Image 1 (spheres, helix red, strand yellow):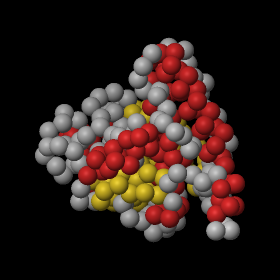
Image 2 (tube, helix red, strand yellow):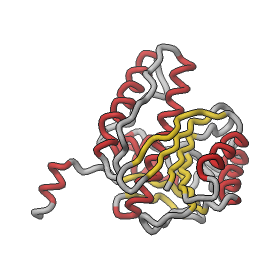
Image 3 (cartoon, helix red, strand yellow):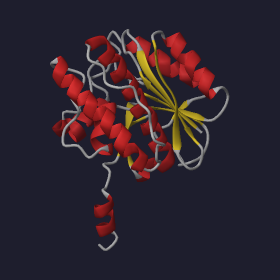
Image 4 (cartoon, helix red, strand yellow):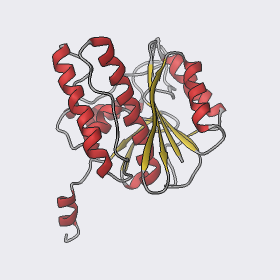
Length: 250
């Protein structure tokens, strides 16, 4: 089973892409890259998934039924994750990015990747979901606030990106499903290269959220919304091994 993460450029710009493979024991990172055009992104999906089982996890609103205002999942991110500064950007069909993001979801559906706000865990198939890295990072790594690597002064962004990279390297190998030890690019010094690494790391977290959803389903994930109104999949907050052992006795 393959898990493909797409940190999609909503309007323009390059998208971060990550491919993870599950062999029944662990996940292995197969590729971390970027592509500019939607056609190139879809060619990348075709290269990795071909006609086989895969789950594509996209950081972008690929289902937008509402003409104006906010989608249901957008509102729910603010109510569930606003205290972590992790409410998402509102999407509606009047936004300039809407045609581009919805078209990506439709192109994936044409390839057999069905929207999957419900799933039977660990059954191979061709699925797609929408994810949102900020709340996923907060929950997977038990953080009090989002990592602020996207905005602000360059030196502050770089420190947060260092922290993000370190959490991926140190913690994902201990999660279930576990990720084999990673080799990730170092955090660069200047702006454009920082953005490139940011895109790739977000693509990686998207792919991991897809693997987590496929492995656990609703047992350890939250679905904000539904297939009619749009939805976002977020892992549950991770319980530390110490807390987990205490819960067995209560």
